[in-house]
Length: 123
Ligand SMILES: [Zn+2]
Image: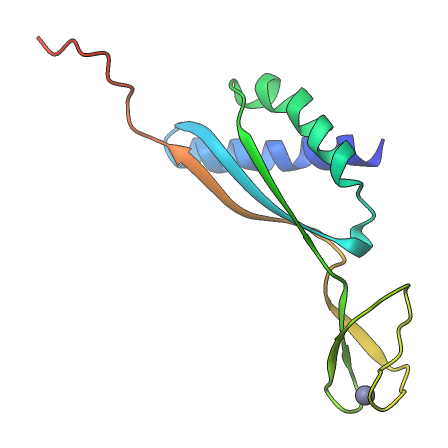
């Protein structure tokens, strides 16, 4: 399944970053997924919940932000949202456009709790 391998790669990436940050517990991960990346948010979330604990050692929260597919016209520089995969500029009708956002899964931020848990025993 596409989502599972994506989530696995993502979690390994997170694990490396967390290790570099001093191995604190990862509390929250924010991911942007473009509509063209082909992921199904529900499957992504489910795969994440399955794999976060085994890979990171503790469950953590996933914030999945779906970003629309955005293209930029090569002729008139108009930026527009691509709907139904119609790669045509709505202003000048040129079909020479390129995707600027929405075709990938990006790790946006990680919240790591690097503080030692306080157990109240100080002496
Ligand atoms: Zn145009």
